[in-house]
Image (cartoon, rainbow, N blue to C red; front, top):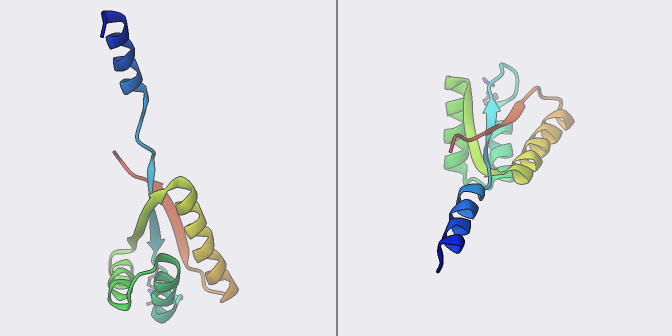
Length: 102
Ligand code: TYC
């Protein structure tokens, strides 16, 4: 490879970033029933019962907890699904997405 091509390869490598990832984060509140949160974690994040209870208790005791980490579109869809289920059941459960440091 000549010098010109070697330079081009370097430039491309510097430009291509890995896709951003987002944590989907559940926030605590005083009103949403624990069982409801566990069911949401099972349904929307495909967690087994034990993992779902663990995440729910972390949110309950620490104020927030990560449910999963995904590319932007999938994270946004999960957040909507959680909020839709919560509002349908008239619970104030809050769910947000946060870009990961990489
Ligand atoms: N703190 C709620 C209760 O005591 C339970 C809860 C857990 C609510 C996690 C929201 O994201 C949450 N019923």
